[in-house]
Length: 405
Image 1: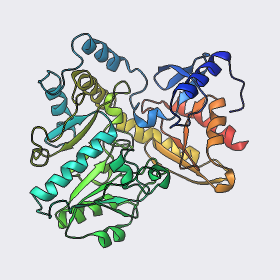
Image 2 (image 1 turned 60 degrees about the vertical axis):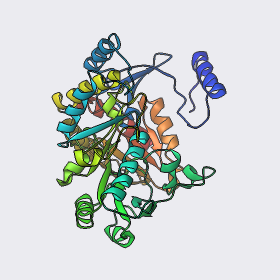
Image 3 (image 1 turned 180 degrees about the vertical axis):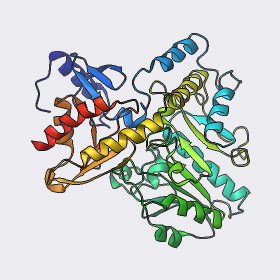
Image 4 (image 1 turned 30 degrees about the horizontal axis):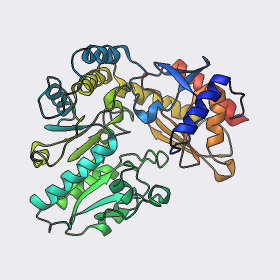
């Protein structure tokens, strides 16, 4: 960024760069406070948050009800491990299972942990139920996927940068083209046990599949005795204009993976949601987590879910997103290749000659709007779902200014 940094900002950037591992490339802003859709840097400059911590802040920063629950529960009990029951876990699992119209929940901490959990569950089902020969089960995944960065997950990434230096890789995955039913059909074998897919590919640049794609995946899985696993860590909990993205096509997965906004933007919690028959396959000791299902996270997640429903955040995302996308499409700039998205998960793809999306994100930050580039040429806009029309208009004025310049 071209702006002059204060001594305080320089100090913290230097501290982070000196003592923190360089596995991220953040914009040069030191955020010290957040409220609603707004954040402030250490020098007091105000910004509109258009990233929402990659959709973990659907309810906004420090939502009052969520913070009240956090403090109340923190004063009672924070952690027991799963060696004992606690009085918030069952309540959380019941609420989430009923919202998903499923039967059982396995809570974890991070999205990647939940994906790993779903993979283990699919594999056990493959051997116990489908009777695939032991250790021969295959899971179909899609090119340009992003499901996390653990060793097993990067094993089936098609992004070389995520894989280089980190092998040997975990076998058992078949990568096919996204949004291509034909490539799925060609990949099927008697040993295929599941399809793992994002309803919209977020990190790939907000890639929205054609209408009917998920419905056809559901049909293929049902016809071939396979599990449909949907990773809704980023798209779930209202982001795309429905509580879950798969509801746009009136289908239901066998296994649903959730995270990010489940913790209300204040504490990590993720979950795998499925039927009793599937999650019932796990026996004591086969899977677990010290912090998974801890009472503090469960209490926060209960309120986080209440806020989403009580404040009609999916419906607000649908209305706000439709308006936002419509206004973005009115921008006339020959360097914009495409504007795409669903709800408040929006990508503006730039042509290669634009020189990358990073400099646009830096310019927008100078104007008081925070967003982040993804896959080099895409500017991603994903504000908290509580954003108002006036705040979107405020953002649009600055987006138009930057693209005009």
